[in-house]
Amino acid sequence: MIAQEVLAVRYGTRIATKADSYLNFHLYGEPDESFEMDYYFWLVRGAGRTVLVDCGFGEEPGTRRGRATLVDPVAALAGLGVDAAAVDQLVVSHAHYDHIGNLHRFPNAEIVIARREYEFWTGPYAGRFQLAHATEPAELACLADAGARGRLRFVDDSLDLAPGIELVVVGGHTPGQMVAKVGPVVLAADAVHFYEELERDRPFVVVADLPDMYRGFDVVREMCEDAGTALVAGHDADVRRRFPDRVDGLPDGLDEHVVRLSGKEIA
Image (tube, rainbow, N blue to C red):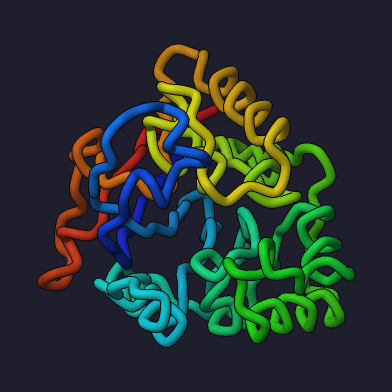
């Protein structure tokens, strides 16, 4: 049995509206409303390894885009006893600004990304505005440089990254959006921003391939069919209510931003 802890770290937030969050929201015939949209990255540690799933937005792009930084991701990791230089693997769910903004701060990590995600964002259509608006050129250049240096590990359809960690490419939101099943939790990242997306079959407003986004919903539903498996949406403030287990002994202020998703032993 392998002891493995999975944590969600809320590092940023903003106030969003349903009209600017759901694709063609006007078609639902409902009044618009505002809600809290949170920004997370996820830490998996145990069995002698430290794996990060995404690494958050950089402070300057976040501020420019109207997002509030609650805690610097690298400082949050330090408060959790994790040195950024000691992270073994950094899983990139997709290459939007709020998921790779601190890639350069993890110099020794193997970067794991879907092959088609990498090929798209280093290819000829990466600069087209309707796709590029959610990315930062300097961050994509950092990703490309990591590829040139041989630091990337590619995922085609799925990959058993380590015992208890399965990565699945679903696409939809971006060409190579990935989700991760880590023991009893499914880290959906932006395959499911908000629980309402899955519960009401409502696609997010930023989409590269709509049929793939719907297919991704179905894949996530299937991954959560096993008894005891819990879904972790990528940006939903309700994550903190659904997973109330806190981590003891953290520095002042950090404890309110970290929730334990799983700390069980898994096969």
